[in-house]
Image (cartoon, rainbow, N blue to C red; front, side, top):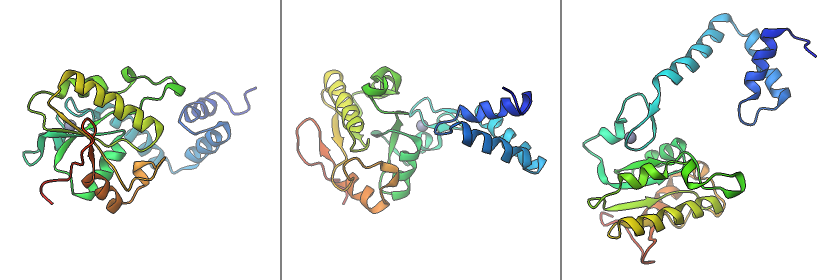
Length: 211
Ligand code: ZN
């Protein structure tokens, strides 16, 4: 049954493809857009098209960026041999806000989640392992303290140990609540979790030398 005509139906269908948007929300968004001033609707459509055209994945860290390498990877002030592994660009932004980390990142764009059918090959783990070499000083696994975050961290640590035995692998520690999503943890807690990270392969604490 098509109550709304082809164009409205198509718009509702497109909104319905977004995560967390059910049929009713899709209708509400479609009608909202149709009632917007035309220039606002144009700006919305244009920003989607332009973002899709211009934004790419950084060839070093896989973060979303307008320029390749991204500003962090191309900054002379960042230590390229200290890599912090995060789940998403939002987690990266949360760590950047603490101003405590001066290395570079690697964005996985997901976590291993067998229940949802997400395996290691579905996220950017291959790209991470390919980046790591003998000059890498430390890989900090900063995925959340969830089952998926821990599984992903352990998988990566094991593979680094197999391929690059001398590379230190640490895991962010205290402060991040169990089951906590990194994005919602405050900056002080996040900075503390980073400072009190522990070595995954030896079990020793790995406090920052410079504090
Ligand atoms: Zn980058």
